[in-house]
Image (cartoon, rainbow, N blue to C red; front, top):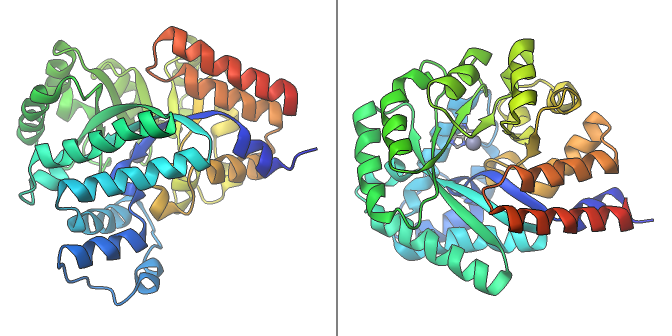
Length: 338
Ligand SMILES: Nc1ncnc2[nH]cnc12
Ligand SMILES: [Zn+2]
């Protein structure tokens, strides 16, 4: 019999909700600060780690944007992405769909091209050398204006071959989906697939608005849906996936205890939920730690973990044929080990 953690480690998985800037480990943050001659407020890696203690989303975001200041060159974005891909390899994440936030960087004078070329080169190397397939999703920062999002979209048009989708992240409360209805409509007209963070700290109504006004194909987080039975029924019927991030929700106090997390309730009501890591360098765990903590807190058995892994490929943007190959691999692994 293999242990639960060995079972999770070997389980083939896809990650669908991951901010590449949120994979910046304190050690790499210090290394890049030194390389770029940036003076940090913190004396040591340990001193920085001590402030990774958040009461809500905004407290985290303030540190996350501060951390991103060390990212300046194409090599920095490459190294950041490559370090994440090595983690994917170690954790049997065979496919990843990652977010990047260009406005965080272009607002500091870093070129859009620098950001995307560094990330993309690492993703290509990861596909060739590690066998990890990928999609890239560009997010608008919702605390910024609609005009700024339109500018970002304009820059993205030169890189349409590299960007699969458009998303929406950052401070949710007070920045409802409606603020971005027009820019999402343009992104849709340009042929991008659409996702949005909704119902992380905001209400279930933001999830409905993301579906109806933005016409997203997946909802990131979406946990507030549990408060609206009609919405849960609709999600179950339409199979619009929720990319759930349990350790993130715990770290940002969206739930008081992991035992209270609605993941299993949503799953039991037929919603296509997936487990993801969001900003693993800040929240204490990558994919396997998220699976493990959820299994322990919610009493998920191996068959339920297999369902979550199947869901992750089902909800991905891989072509149908690729999807079914991965799903078959999950099923074979589960037949042999569950
Ligand atoms: N959990 C999160 N919610 C909203 N925006 C984010 N940007 C990075 N992580 C985020
Ligand atoms: Zn997120």
